[in-house]
View 1 (cartoon, rainbow, N blue to C red):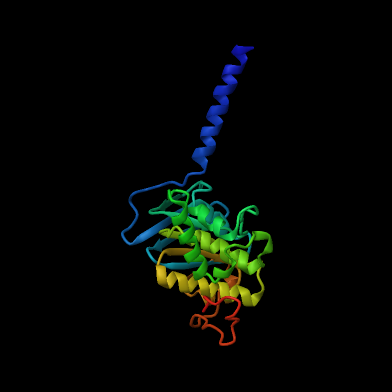
View 2 (view 1 turned 180 degrees about the horizontal axis):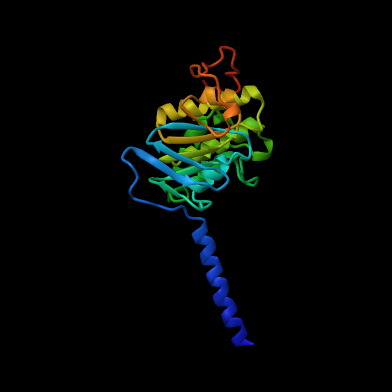
Length: 248
């Protein structure tokens, strides 16, 4: 019996090693100067080349199934493009389509989880408090995720992505489950924080109105959704400032 178990253990070790390798992106030092991410000849359910510069806001506009999510997974190291290469420099954070908040932790503690590398808990909580103020949830930091509206949950997830101040922020269409007005307000919040912090931001959405509110460079993954050229949407004068005081 010991003779039969030994090769099985070795085989399991090899399989675990392959899984870990599959979750890593292909890293290259030869990224063009001024760029934070480069995608070349990636054809896994999509075919595209893309370069995102440092501090640039790029919107991938396409319907669900046009592989914007796949591209973000490759850039975030959650998947591997075959064939093609993905090159990323600097730190990366991801805002998923679903908020993915831990229900047994408060909103502030959920945001602070992104700072586990910071030793002092008080420092983590203070940074989480500040970024929650920035996204309009300063008065909701002690709330439980189950008590949040969809808009508030999306803002908490955005705060968790921003709190570590990444070089590249990947935002995978958190606007989709929201009402039209909440979508545009969240998009304007993303743009305002991008203008202040200037990370590179890559956003996916299927809503041309969200793409206009975000501004930045639009890369249409679905030509039928290309937004009409116009200036970025200005904040509505009657926006519900009381609900989100930090929103534009």
